[in-house]
Amino acid sequence: MENPNKKRKVVLLKDILNSLSKEKVVLPIGIDNEGKIWSENLIDYSGLLVAGATNTGKSVFFNSLIESLIYQSSPVNLQIILIDCKRVEYLRLKNSPYIFGGLIVENEKAKQILIWCQSEINTRYNLFNVYNVKNVEMYNQMAEKKLPNYIIIIDEFSDLMIYDKNFFEKAFTDIVIRGKCAGFSIVLGTSRPDPNMVITKKISNIFKNKLTFAMVTKEYSIVIINEAGAEKLLGKGDMLYKREKEKPVRLQGFYTEN
Image (cartoon, rainbow, N blue to C red; front, side):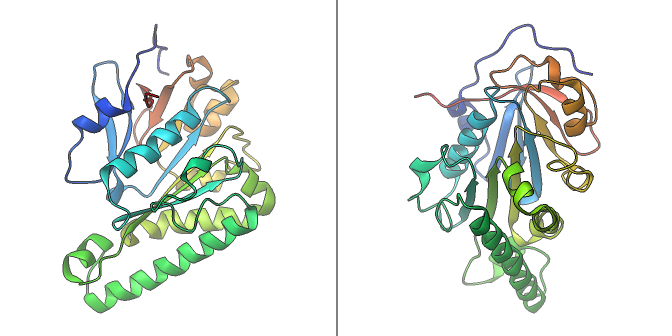
């Protein structure tokens, strides 16, 4: 188990973005105690599961994540599918050219857009067969009409699970398994990591990369990262980040200046 930081460190989003490589679109995660910035290449990243109690840094993380993606790429190359069941966090983005299909706030529309994602993944795999390539990056090097990458961001996916657990569990699983090569990534967030209705065993197993902000109980920490520790985090962006087959590391999240 990670030991808690003794104090918080302010990490500005602009500082992280200025230090990132310009060759790839990356997902900046945070910074460790030694000053190392942790980030992931969007092309190689199939999914991220994010949890955190209210007012611990989850919404700030999502907002900064979206801003970092917009900063690094053009809407021709990157489209964001943004599902906000809470209906309050992302209204300013509803007319952005980066937001594919507009801001989605209704459960049934969320269902339809994920059905479209699965259909588009199938279409892309058929194209790859025609061009004899393995992924969207190789395809874009050969084809005249480029295919954009899509990142699906869902803040508070517990509402969707309650609405239709079977459908969304299967859809998330399919997109994580088949989406990476087709240029699709998915980030799920929740403040209610119930192991029966929200972070089920299937979802926990399929999302290899996990991030948790402070949680109210040790049991919730175990649900998310398979061990205790999140219940001792300090809040305000203090997080534990767990990559596949690695131990969780303590990071400090970033925020955007007003």
